Image 1 (spheres, one colour):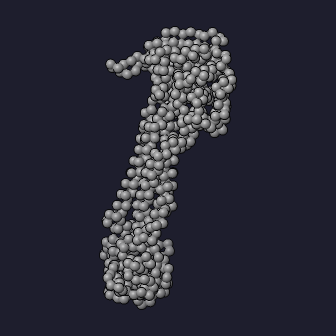
Image 2 (image 1 turned 45 degrees about the vertical axis):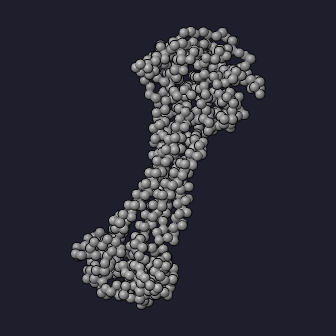
Image 3 (image 1 turned 60 degrees about the vertical axis):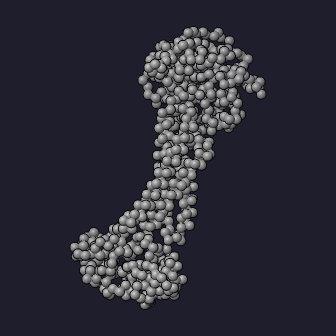
Amino acid sequence: MIFTLALRNLLHDRVRLAVTLVGILFSIVLVAVQLGLYLGSSRMITANIAHSNADLFITTYGAKSFEDGGVLLTDRERHQALSTPGVETVVPLVVSFAEWRKPSGGSSRVVVVGADSDDQGLVPWSLTEGTLEDIKAPDAIAVDRSYLNELGVSGIGDTAQVATGRVKIRALTEGIRSFTQSPYAYTTLNRARQLLGVESDRSTFLLLKLAPGADVEKVKADLAQKFESAEVLTKDEFESRSLKQWLFRTGAGLALIGGAILGSLVGTVIVAQTLYSSTKDHIHEFATLRALGSSKGYIHKVILAQAGLSAVMGYVLGMSIALVILYASRNSSLPLVMTPGLAFWLFALTLFMCAISALSAIIKVTKIDPATVFAR
Amino acid sequence: MTTTPVLQAENIVKELGAGAGLVIALKGVSLELVPGELTLLMGPSGSGKTTLLSILGCIMKPTSGAIRIANESIDGLSAEELARVRRDHIGFIFQSYNLFPTLSALENVRIALDVRGIKGFAATSRSEEVLREVGLGHRLTNYPRNLSGGEQQRVAVARAIASSPSIVLADEPTAALDSENGHAVMALLARIAKEQNRSVLAVTHDPRTLGYADRVVRIEDGRIVGEERRPEGINAPEITDLTKRRKLHA
């Protein structure tokens, strides 16, 4: 009967129910979009690191992100790494911002990523046109399809100038987007060095694969002792450093999280207000229940059930709209991401939000004097 | 039929308000209720009838005095413990019925069982049984808005007796009803007292109800000023048959 009474109380005033649901709906959509953007941004920022085949990264000292390493490491560091017990392979990787001159004039910035596919360090992972072999051609480059317009080209075969050299698009990826809005341009290691005008032994990162059974922490400590101007990071450490740089030092992440918190607060206030007014409207019924001998706990359960039902209905509506927005954003420069985990936490947040909202109503009914049943 | 009191109130005093606004609503009231009797508590407005009913029903605490219900003293019990006493021993009938407008007749009765932990088929079956008992077997799924005042009060009676309480307390049960329905509800209360061996106390100032009482207690200015026992057989026999009564209304 608790759920029956709760549901009937909710349905009794359809307008108020609609206001409650709209409140929860907007709250859920706002939080889902903000967290979806946060998750989407995080994935974008860490995508290259996550797809690299490395147990450890050697970076120049203080490198803040994947795009921020400089091209300063030399063969010296590479050989030092190779001579460290437990290290199986060391793959150099060149990453640097460069100017992209459009064929029709004008320019924009790209992030040149140079790696040899045979080394299996980092290769573009979602080729939709062209192959890894095509990228080995002397002037070849691969960019993401979503940036073709921005780069002033139309597809495979088009040419442009990157920094000091000409390039031809020989492969296209899909879904590799850049948080900095400077598209990634994948090419071979040596071609990247040539384009950027750096010496042939230079690299931005060294990707280390460890021998089976090697102790990652021990190898990391051994390597750290050898380098004065380089750092050794695990994949997780490098990812979190990149996230910190782009999401928190720039304030973008804080804005997204702030928006999500604001959305939750607005939703909580709206639900609290409507639940309180619903409880006030049904106060004589709650007093009757009390006079009939119900415990306070029973009445609290009715109010919490009202909150829970509102949460479920609001969540279903809110998530439906959030999924439509998600779908619409799939080809945008910053697509939203929704995972089962995020969907679960959003539901938990909605329930929590509604439970908190029920507090004012619960405080109200706790003060009910059952003697008021005789006053009507 | 046992005559051991199921409710004993001794020297009940109730003060309301404070300071200059202090009102002594009850000034040392003593009363006993025994099973199988319909007792009427009569008196003018402001005499303390409803205050006494609230105290006897464990809804309000007396300022002083002692109350025992089913041999249990309720002195010093917390609000939750008093709620437990109400659940275990008392059924209420209110002047304005106090039905849940969003629940059907059946559900209005079921919820009284639900708060007592009786759920599922047992609750549904018992609710149907008591609604049939009060002549509403054909109105189970109707909502209060679709029931007449008399029918609503009979749902309230069914709700009060569903859990088989030993005491039924009714606050002006006929005040909102026309004469015909008023008689029907009083006949029902008299039947509940007699046939189900319960103590029924009805607060009223409606003289039409006198014919149904086994005992009439008069209260004025917070004091019991008189008590009369009605002779056997004085109950209005022509309206105790509810089925006949309903046909009459139809």
